[in-house]
Length: 148
Image (cartoon, rainbow, N blue to C red; front, side):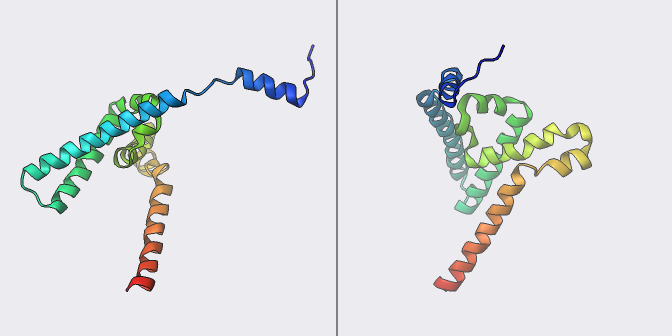
């Protein structure tokens, strides 16, 4: 036998059943993990500078190594575990972007390299690329019109 609930009773029922978010602990985990990822990037930057590379080479080398590490740990399945633990702290821009490219590729590798990996690799990262490129073009036009 079904009992009828008023909208207020239903809302209270749902509120009681809904899990309570652990905002403080989630924020602390995100802060620590995101900070540690940035520390790794800073360590790589300092190491490359210590090797005598110029700033442009250091920047490119750091980006390449961080993208590789993000893809490598995604391939091993460790980045997903880190994401479950750290939440938003694991999407630090460069390693999170690498993860967003590699994850769909790993998921669709059963469908083959062309129709699986190649076709689906940019499923998640595609919108990021489109909006990033579009925004950079727009900013470039504004800069050209008003500052040159």
